[in-house]
Image (cartoon, rainbow, N blue to C red; front, side, top):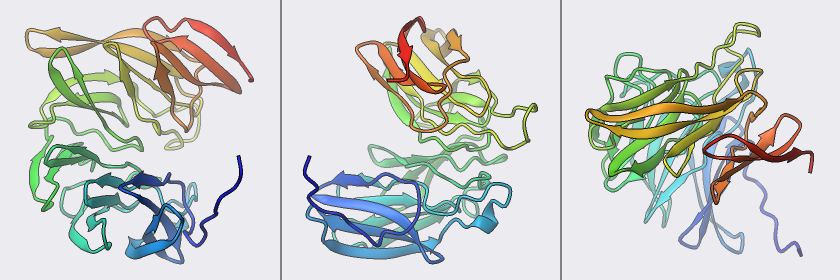
Length: 298
């Protein structure tokens, strides 16, 4: 393909661009600041805003990876950005003017993960759902997307936030917000934050340096199964099978494969098959059974 255009000056970091409404939104570390920049589809800058201090090397001295983290979330005429240190701001997409700001640590009782908040926040109707990871206030929080007002916090679930973005799924009529926390997979009701189910997959691994493991990938859902995988010499990947019960929803282990080393980059499900990395190569697996259809380097 022919190169049409390059865009520079966006700073340092790890996020993907968000493309919606004829605009390209991306965030980067420029100097000491975290910037949110918006371009048209020809690459001409429309506006930029300073979001706040960027995640720095000093913020994670045990593993220095400074720069921007999360991709912006675009919803209609609003762009929502969560910075690595916990500042969440809603911006007007048309001109970048801030609408409201909430601090996940100061206002919601959260705790910054060792490598910084990295999620793209989730929009569900009139609510914005994020994971401050409060040990007292709750893992999840839902805000009014127009004002930033707190709608609920999941005090029943108090796992530390990791680095994945939450997903919204529906199975047998039950809507669920699902993510990977420090302790593993967890699902809550998007209506009130009530715990629906948990699957323990703790990221800690005492055989290597403490705090040097992480859940970085979002889960993926299809055909009544939720799949997730991680790396860092931990436990590979696996799926749980969702089942509606008289009291709500349960997750039963379906299968586990320790060879699925997926540090970053996630995975996709197509026609009942997972396509992902497996150690040094690639693999295609049956979503429901974990059977490898093929695996290799290319």
